[in-house]
Length: 394
Image (tube, rainbow, N blue to C red; front, side, top):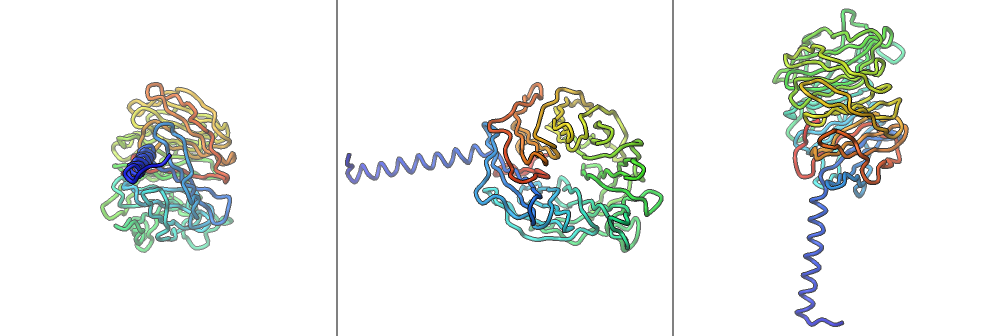
């Protein structure tokens, strides 16, 4: 069949319209991007996935993965405006800042060293002004894995361009000592931090003593300068505890703490700043991470069981709903960045990701298409941003 010039122009226009429509549809279907840290290679890597809004399916974006900026990336955080990703590289004691493109690609911008050694967790306040990080070992002379000492909490201001400024000086302990030691009465007490969380009422850090097997929940008030002031001297949990993860509800009134030795999640009322234990509920074996879906559900991964436990949430109270199988050794979990009804776990030993659709009424989890997804490497952390918008919640 042959077309005249007018017909050819019409045909080209129609094809262009179809292509444009397809691209628009693709853009509409991408509800957000997931950034997954993996640590099996040196340097570590960040794999980036698109999230399909209609199916929850994850698709690796072109040119992924990206170098993480150091060895053994273990934690991630994003700014509320969804423009910056921060990756904590444990073995290099640094935090790498990445700019995030509209297509989900990440671009390294700057790197800062943490004050101590072996950083483990990080968090950003709701206004996107400060980044908090906890180190396994504080920068006390002589600290090492063989000669352990308390961990520390450091606070970095976030500049307008997303870079991290000079760490804030906290003078509540020493005039010239800017990271805050996690100390009890003895400054040499070994306390290993495991998680950090920020709410409108304060900053919270979990830690444990590996010798006495006692866990602690530290609470700090914040200030406009970023300096933090202890609200308690370290709230002991109970003997035989090892807190593993922290999350807060959307109101910032309740804090949820998983414990990998007690096999439970504890709820603390933090509306006044200082934590007060409200209730506890059992989990699976060795709970490793948790996430809150809006005001209705909480999900806890169980590393040894290779399961995820679902709970109903009402006024801070958790009610057991169900237990669902995951890949081997889940150690991270998050809901989709626009809270349209999907949840994802990263499974360290299984080198996979699981995707689930959340039943908005019952909280039940149903496997998404193509789940589990192979990460090809061992994933350690996951965080997401919405496509074309600001980051949403936890």
